[in-house]
Image (cartoon, rainbow, N blue to C red):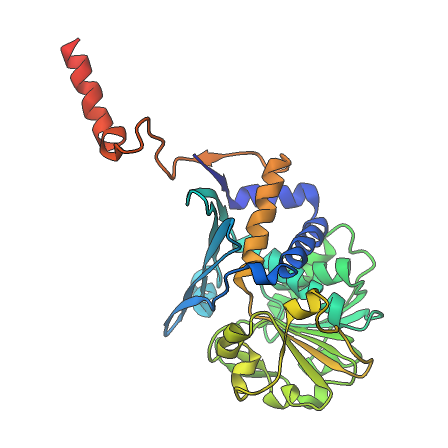
Length: 356
């Protein structure tokens, strides 16, 4: 039997635990795993593209546990009442190859993306950052807002989305949450207005195109840019000149993957970047000066999903989640008799009854 965590299980967990605490603890797990960077098998995700979206597999292992995530990205899905992104994942034991956990990752990916964003900002943004512009107010936006309020101390959130209904939805959801009473919400009329006075700018838009959400005039010295939405070939959010700014420094998760699908897909192969693991392990400094413009070119990496699955498995052991199991793998008296222990079992029982 294999442990199973569904959407309702995660929802109950977050309601009991609180999203802020979950994100905080998950960020600690992600940081601990990034500090073990050399122990992990790394590869760019395997992507299958179609005219309307992408389906991806994201595997990794540290030699003891193996994980993978199945995830899609279909921006037009909302027009027919479907989610843009859905995901599930598996955590397995390397020694036996047996799956340990099958879990939903649609909600959990949103939580781990927010945790990773805030974790990077903790190391790269100016410590006194209190104002964030949030460009793109869709399904990821609440999670980003909660993470930055909890982990960074953001106290003013400046919102902009082309779809005013998305901004209204975000404002309504944040207003109903306990613990966010000290978060000031400001609705902006444009991206430029949202960025004015911001210490951190988070872009989390969904369109699969080379968009130009931020341009150099919107970026001032000392800003931290959290570019989340660009996560596949042909999908970007920053004008290339933002990356070329003399005071800019770009941090990525896994450089070979980011070269394919991050903001840096717009740049030449010799464009210099820093991998987040180098900062997490202290091999490279975080923010170097108050004037530096730090850019976290986030596309999501398999190690973060490994961390999320491992964290969920830990919460199962802590009995924070009700344990449920499914018969995903046969349990046999004779491991060499797959037929007899499954398909043939009914026939054998019928024969015994007939002969009795």
